[in-house]
Every structure is written in structure tokens, then in C-alpha cells.
Image 1 (cartoon, protein in one colour):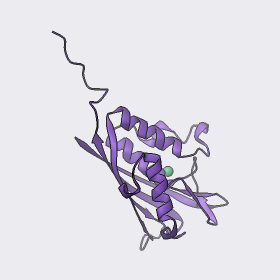
Image 2 (cartoon, protein in one colour; image 1 turned 180 degrees about the vertical axis):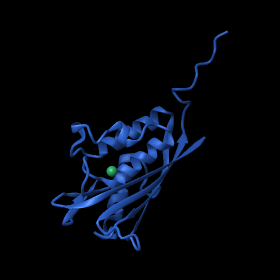
Image 3 (cartoon, rainbow, N blue to C red; image 1 turned 60 degrees about the horizontal axis):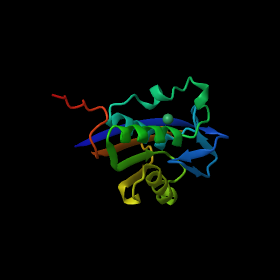
Image 4 (cartoon, rainbow, N blue to C red; image 1 turned 120 degrees about the horizontal axis):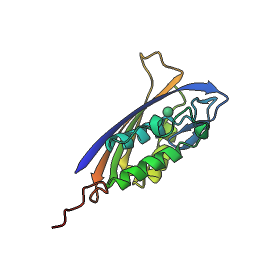
Length: 167
Ligand SMILES: [Zn+2]
């Protein structure tokens, strides 16, 4: 059995904040604001993984109101989602992501980001797609958006499966 998951996220650019996308630090004059490190791509992947197994979303598991997550490394969120996916009896098949942002140009960093995301998910780099687009016609030049879909494959019976009745 397979399952599909979809995740979306957006963050506003802020001066004086380091920029992290897909777990990779990128040199830029602005970073993404938010309570954690603002990694828009990892947040969308995390939500796609959680959505695929109908788990609570990233905001429910790691509430921005909790000071514990202030400046947190978003890899923590991704690892928790991945653990839940595995506990539910699934493995990640592939991931496809679209990033929408005016700057910096993602092209030169795309391989690095795909490699890092693949490493975090335990996948081959060929199983992580990444497209970068500019927000044409969206009037969102100070915003980064990410859309992600993931495919999960069933690897073992779910731990939640009802035990067989004894006779
Ligand atoms: Zn986010």
C-alpha cells in the first residue's frame, strides 16, 4: 500500500537572520523569520510526511507558542515526522518539492539541498526532486514558499493494526 502526503509552508524574509533552506545554510543578506530557524522547505516536507499518515501537523506537534522551539533546528521536526512515518509502518519512496522565492538563486545550491534532504530522509539523491521558481505575478518578493509531495510505501504491518483474535 502507498500513501501520498502534501505540505505547504511560507516564511517572510528578515534582515540579520541566517538563511537555511533544506537544512543547508545559504549566504544571503536576509534569512527567513519564524519561531524556529524558518527552514521553509524542511517545514513543508515535515508536514507532507505527517499528512501522509494523518498525524497532527507541525504546528500542533511543535507549537510556535512554546519557547522550547525558539530558534530550533528544523531537522528536529523532520526527524520526529520520519520516526512517526516509520512507526506507522511506512518508508519514504520519493519527495518532490517546489520552492518559490525571488532571491537568492537556488540553482547553484540545488544539488547541495537535494543531497542534504536525501541524507535526512535516508533516500538516494535521485529520490528528491527540487524545482525553484520566482514568484512571478504573486507580489511576494519578500516571501519564500514551499510546496512538497511525498510518497510513502508500506514496509510492515502498522503497529496500530488490531491484534489477531485468539480462539
Ligand atoms: Zn515554517
